Image 1 (cartoon, rainbow, N blue to C red):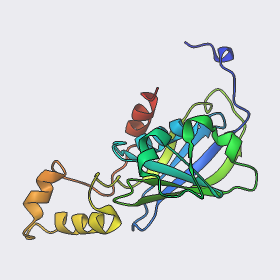
Image 2 (image 1 turned 135 degrees about the vertical axis):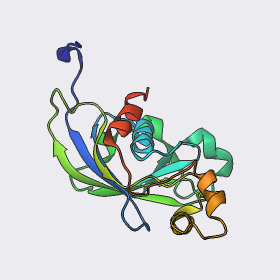
Image 3 (image 1 turned 90 degrees about the vertical axis):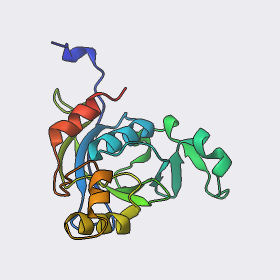
Image 4 (image 1 turned 120 degrees about the horizontal axis):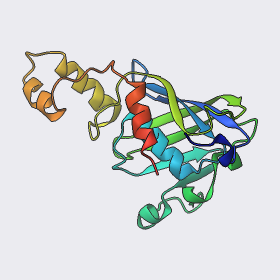
Length: 196
């Protein structure tokens, strides 16, 4: 068993509720993360808690600043007045003051998946909450490259209608039965636990 005293505890644990916008019913996750987590690792926690494959660019919008993968987007940079800052250089604790209650996490700029991240609580660290983990959630993550919220809605409609001309094609595309209401917190934490 690991010795708890070996670890330097963070000062604060953030309880974050992350919701996908423009989707009904709401797809959401609640995660606990330490204030010492870098935005680059928070990206991985969000990806794994939802079930995304991290195969597209992303960006955090906190206050008036943008943070993301600087090297990956330098050649595509389009906003010289609000340049993208390197997410590897900032911890969540550096950016969230007591009056910041929410921010955005955007993933896959083509499909346009906007996540609203709400700071629900500040918790003191203890032996069971000082590492990133998912503690709750509802509904399945949309498949990658489905076409954003409108494409996902259309996909679900077609999968629910076995008489639709595209039903078999999309059934195979998603890999078989797809339950839009499914979510397994244990699987989410198993994925988060593999983050390095």
